[in-house]
Image 1 (tube, rainbow, N blue to C red):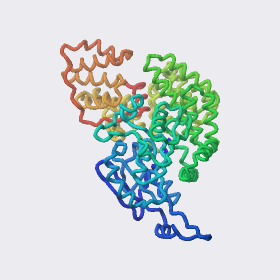
Image 2: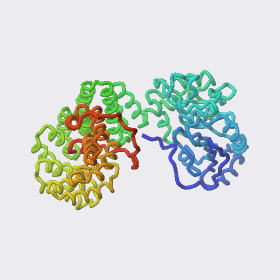
Image 3: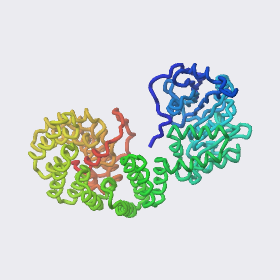
Length: 580
């Protein structure tokens, strides 16, 4: 989930101007929307009873770690515009924590524009640090820093290593807040149970006497509690009134109706293996408007991360057990069960995936990827006819799903039912003539008929549409080897290896291409390296044994001319499963 307060808007604000810029920061003034002149004229006007209308508030914002200059865009401009506020935005040009020297140079222009009127400094994370550190320098008496750092210096906070790599002695001397720098009323929002944010909050409280508004169990994501504009304005008013008790009470009341609070508390409950509690909290978040898809993606991301950590530690059985335990806990959730099945397949635990896929299918029959996942697992166990039946049922239940048609086409192809396989690929191409996956499937059929030249042309077209697909590269390389063109095949195998080094067929293809162009020693090195990194791939081990060990030391690597790009996860899985 990405907070919207830093959302970038393309249109320039009328009258916006750069107040200061150097190699580290840019400071932009954005007038209040609407008739700014009328607003200013109304400020100070006499009200009944001899009272004066309050001057309008100016919001001074500091961008977070990832926000970068883009025209007159500033972090926090969306809520400022909705609230009708004038805004001054500090935007860093890199991860620099707003160096003191730049801030000293920018301060006079900001102070002059503010003119001592009501203002509030506001920022998140890196920006939260700056809002608290520099408010007094800018002539602002009140500030709100959300999940701020107290320092990124290893000497100040050796335990918090998140941002040490950005520390620059030249720029960051004296990062810690001093009592003389602290705003008259400064508030920081931070989770007392988040180890790193807790360390920083304690240091800021000790160094500058700041008020700590605790946001338990949301981690480094407390900014989500302020995404509703009306509540943000209420919080700002209470800070300007220096009313900490009322602010804390308002936040406590707000949490009960805030979708993001329930989302993030559920996130942390899940991390602590309190799945039942997490599900109750996510249910409440959904009732408050959380999109179901976001919940599903978060659950599967957390589960996938946990399984990978266990596998990296050599605890594959524990990872498998974790997934199956989660499946039991999600017994009534068809989508979650399907996703668990896919995670197990992706982790090489296809045997365990059949049960959650079948449980998902028993609950719902309208999720196409369940049929695809279950049939893939069944086919891998040698039950090809059953797999074909499952995929066919899926197409009847969820008509028009291109990926399921392609999947069925490959199942039919591997069952030597070429005409039926081609029909599935043609169905997709009839609707999507430039579908790279369907072109690849048809290429496989043509090759099986012995029409390699046509198959190669289709693959050249497919790779033009999906140049980063490792499986397609491998297949084209294999076709070129069949027609006796190892020189053209070689670069495709090399690109495939850059994209998906875990695909044994790419290693085998490159070794064969090198062997057939007379470079046996280089081929032996490729086969030996593959055998070392893929010890359980029987085909890789076979070609290594056939070629034998290299006689000479490995030559220096030569960089490939083609760019390195991220592989497609689905294509990588299909390439590994169906690759020759």
